Image (tube, rainbow, N blue to C red):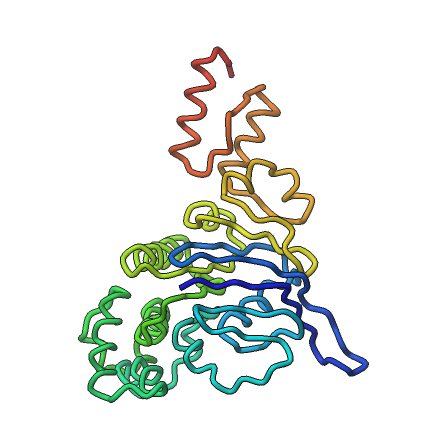
Length: 289
């Protein structure tokens, strides 16, 4: 499903002494089936932007098209259920939102809330629990008897059971160790490919943005500073650092080699494998350490 934001602006507490401009002049086209990462330092507008994607908040100016549905600033629209069903959001620490007495009931809650019959919801729950790498044996357990990592997977299954066409990930690996972070990110990458989901990742991890996304949007002071492929974005690391952002460790290592050893790479290396290949190519051209 395609999402397009056109001249979107949002102000908190409009017409009060506390009115504040949060985002402005947002123009982003997210093609169906693409994987977009949104990066930016704290306060750049990332969280406000993602809440627009399924109508949790509505723009004070501009419009957002989600599939065939258009959300227009200033126009009341009570029928946003279809948008919220098609666009699933996985917030930070989603396990904190678990509340039912069994895993099955928790996963079924979302689909049933959208009118899905109980038996169909149970079927969707069984499919979703397998998608997140858990067995059906956990379905009758209390979610609060599971490990933290399992609880997060159950919460994610609750979003997937609603069969979204777009999935929005707000720092989905927050609080996880490196192994857990990779497992969750690989889980979403596989779902993106197998289900053809449009995936939108809001993250502070430059490694995740570089490794998984097709395109990256940099948010700065409430608006889009730059949009491009990971190679485009990380080809000018100094500009990112000026914005207070980090760069992938492999790019940082490249910069060190360029400064200390006089290496000159053809393009940024966004993985260990590409870094090794880049060093080999440089040395073949006659560079020495």
